[in-house]
Length: 198
Ligand code: HEC
Image 1 (cartoon, rainbow, N blue to C red):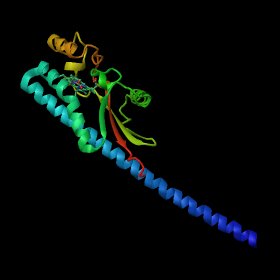
Image 2 (image 1 turned 120 degrees about the vertical axis):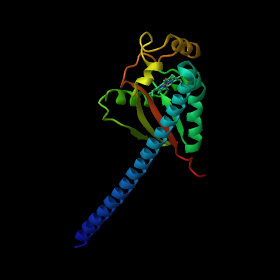
Image 3 (image 1 turned 90 degrees about the vertical axis):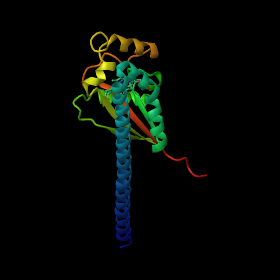
Image 4 (image 1 turned 180 degrees about the horizontal axis):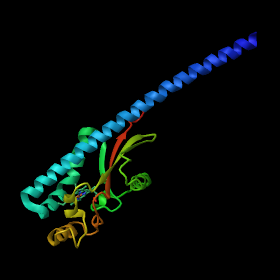
């Protein structure tokens, strides 16, 4: 009789633990989804802001001026959006133009391979959870012919003057030779967890 009670209690305890686990599992899933949505929204805003500025610069002064403008402002735009969003916003690439935008961490390179092996567009974004941060990644593809003016094949798509200005500003430029739909870069949005209270 006593044994039966112990078994019953143990079973009840096990069920309670399972329910508790499920609950915290779904809370965790909701938290991850909230960071994914935040990352998506921040990267979309950043993309639109950079693209609008770039288009305005091309309209104002042509492509050569726009290279100059982009070189002076792209990082400023992501940095100031970072401050607003309380996260770190980066545009990285395996063939980067700005040396600051290289795939510096092993995790970045793994994600790059992941996106690069899914060229069908079925992989949209991903969120990585580590002990100290949530990191959101989204692919940046060559989605419109205008990108090729500065990232296409040097002898075919780039105006010689544009190529010259780019070479002057970025002597180690790797970011040409692309075609439509190629993976050009990744958005990386890092949300750091607050340090534990002391
Ligand atoms: C007028 C020339 C120009 C056009 C058009 C242009 N870019 Fe760029 N792109 C640049 C320059 C210059 C940089 C380096 C900016 C910097 O110094 O941070 C850059 C950097 C980038 C980066 C960051 C990684 C790296 O290589 O440093 C990505 C991603 C990118 N461009 C994607 C695109 C996409 C996608 C398009 C089309 C929607 C596009 N660019 C159109 C000039 C251009």
